[in-house]
Length: 253
Image (tube, rainbow, N blue to C red; front, top):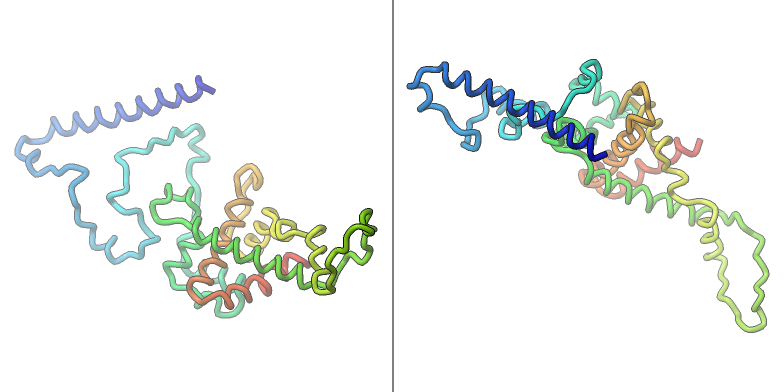
């Protein structure tokens, strides 16, 4: 393990040296008068007109770009990944997932944020971790309520060995709490089920190795983040309705 980390460090150092050597050669070949107008990387630079007019999700901020990539490419054939940048395709996925006019439930910027994982562009365009956290808590609460309010599944009560010494409190309304012994929210919202739901609705595509690529975690996070975004934009009632009608009902089929 230590050998691999030292090899990657050496490779990163060589890559940095090659970049700065090329920069030095270019700066020497320039006229001396042009060096006075050169600005440092930490100085405030005005964004281009195209970047200023483009939406936030469609480009990487100039001040967050490194002069070279620290990533060491092992297999160039697998270094390029296609990601969707078509708003219409995203709207179609939201309509499939949320129902008719689902694309109108969220503003444009929030829709892209909800489906952006932190691994994309090193998180420089924003990512959906916080939305996914809120959405997961909402899904857990709704699943717990659904389990508890279901009819009791355990009618046989185990005899109490100490029934002569104590009298337990019993109430028919509490009988459904025993349902939690056999069913938990994690049994409904499994990574595989959530990922398959996201794929079926068009929020993601299937790679060569779904499990090894981390697809399950990424896709389930996208579903949770959509729920969290709807809760923040439209309120808890709208998010609860989406969880029951568009997620739990499909996962229980």
